[in-house]
Structure formats: C-alpha cells, structure tokens
Length: 333
Ligand SMILES: CC(C)(COP(=O)(O)OP(=O)(O)OC[C@H]1O[C@@H](n2cnc3c(N)ncnc32)[C@H](O)[C@@H]1OP(=O)(O)O)[C@@H](O)C(=O)NCCC(=O)NCCS
Image (cartoon, rainbow, N blue to C red; front, top):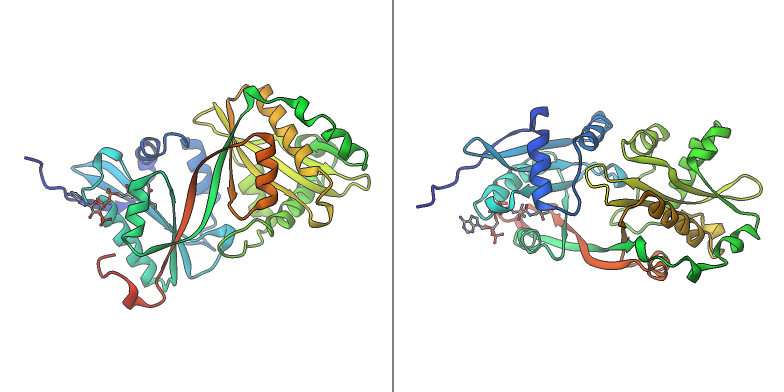
C-alpha cells in the first residue's frame, strides 16, 4: 500500500541549489539551467527593492519540489507577485504542489497582494490544470519558436545587408564597440530601455537603472558580447539590437534576447539585418537551434521570425489570480 504523503516545507538554503535545479531539469528538460546561472540570478537580485520567498518541499527527507513568490522587476508593481511551483514528475498528484502554492499565496495575502501571476506551457497539462483549478485566468500568450539553423538558406535574404548599408547603417557587436567606445554599454542600455517599451506585456515594463541592466545583462555568466548585435547609424546613434545568450547547461541551443528597433528607425530592414547576423553566429558556434518567445499580438516581430523560418512550438500562457476581493478566492488556495 502506498504510504500517505506528508509534505514538509522549509526555506531554501544554498545547499538546495542542486536539488532544485534537478527538479527543473526533470520538469522542463528543454530548458535546463546551471548552478552558475542560478547563483548569478540570486546574487544580482536587489533584495532592498524586491521581495522573494523560495521554499522547498520535502517528502521523507528528499527534495521533491520547490516554489517561489517574487516581485517582477521587469514589470514592477509592489502589490503584484509571480508564483513558481514545480514538483518532480514522479511525485506529482500527491499534494506537494498545493502545499507549496498555499503557503506562497498566504505570504502574498499577508503582503497585501492584489494579484499573483504564473506561467505554464499550453502543452504541459499538469501545470495548466493546476492553475485553472486555483482561480488563475489567462492574461496573455507567447509563442515559443525555434529556428533550426543547420538548414538556413542565406540566399533567400540576399540584399538584406546592402539595404541597411545603403542607409548608412552598420551592424556591429557590443564586443567590438566596447573596445573603441567607453560609452558603448551606456548606449546599449539606452537602446534596450527604449525598445523594451514596445514589447507587449501584462503590465507596463519598468525602467531599469543602468547598474541593474549591467548586472542582469553584461555580467550574466551566459552573456555573449560577440552575439550582442547592434545597428548604428552614420551619426553614431544606436538604432537597433538583437542579442543571443548561451544556455550553459545545454549548449545545443542559444536563447534569443531582446530584438528591438527604435520607433523612428522602423521599416528600414534593420531587425532583419540584425537577426541574420544572429543566425550566422549560431551556425558558426555549431548550435542546433535558437529559441525565442513572442507575444501573440507582436505582429511585426512574428513576421520577421516567420520569414526567417522560426518554427512555432506550443505557446506559453501567462495567468493571473485576482486577490483584490478575498471572497473570490478558494479558502484552500
Ligand atoms: C503544477 C504542479 C506544480 C502541481 O504539482 P503537484 O504536486 O502534482 O500538485 P498537487 O498534487 O498538490 O495537485 C495536483 C492535482 O492533483 C490532485 N491530487 C493531490 N493529491 C492527489 C492524490 N493523492 N491522488 C490523486 N490526485 C491528487 C490535486 O487535487 C490537484 O488537482 P486540482 O488541481 O484539481 O486540485 C506540477 O504539475 C508541476 O511541477 N508542473 C510543471 C510546472 C508548472 O507548470 N507549474 C505551474 C505554474 S507555476
């Protein structure tokens, strides 16, 4: 007979990194993460500004799941939190996820949260059902897409480089600019902030201080300055960006970072020229594919990616649970 499960919750400690990463590796095998990346995210988290509570769930002394309640610095509202709950696949449907979620939600309520946000891939039925039965409602969807670079045919894009070059625009990298311009990081930061305003999101994006951008982007262990492409005009103005960063745990692919072109420079072929350089980089690096995410309302970006041959995967759904009227909430969650 199966022994009844009793979840033991406790706060996360550095000794739990490997166990928590193992839970994610089993739950999200296509998106594995390394200890180095986790440590960097934690060390660069500004706990003077943002709240974070991370718990682990144990079953008979073994870590079987973890959960986290945290502010969302990229779209900050003091009264909104993100919830992550992940349980080892062979320990699911035993109540661990519920115990983690209940505890995190209790914290959110104590802190006066008006909503919690969570994300699930539409093809991962466990996560979708879990959130749906706990009062989460869909707020937005992002297509995940992958470009398998081995079969990429540059001949289909002949003329893309010349088109921008004729306008006096050159495509370069942050690595190259940094070598000759001490202001390169500052300029790349301004560009990134400007372009981020127009990426569709549930709540408006929050302007990030320069130091936070440096920590999150240029100091990240998976930052690739040679794959951080920038379009610069004849006057030296940074007009567009498209960057890739590495997946330390699974070098078979690269993550796409931000692709953006300043409003006044759109419609000139800059995004396409930048993205072609990312594809060339990926091929030279020998990876199999590039992974990207695009909001389903982001027509212009989706069109560029579709033209390049990115293949759509199941979407990722962002959900929110309204906590503003406590009577709407299930007493147990
Ligand atoms: C979502 C997730 C965390 C749930 O973890 P879990 O430990 O299986 O969660 P629980 O066991 O507490 O609850 C899952 C369901 O199993 C049911 N259940 C609990 N104990 C059970 C048992 N002994 N037998 C059968 N069913 C049981 C629960 O009632 C619940 O159903 P409900 O949603 O209709 O209430 C897990 O599926 C997961 O890690 N998925 C990937 C990550 C993810 O998508 N997370 C959600 C976004 S944050």
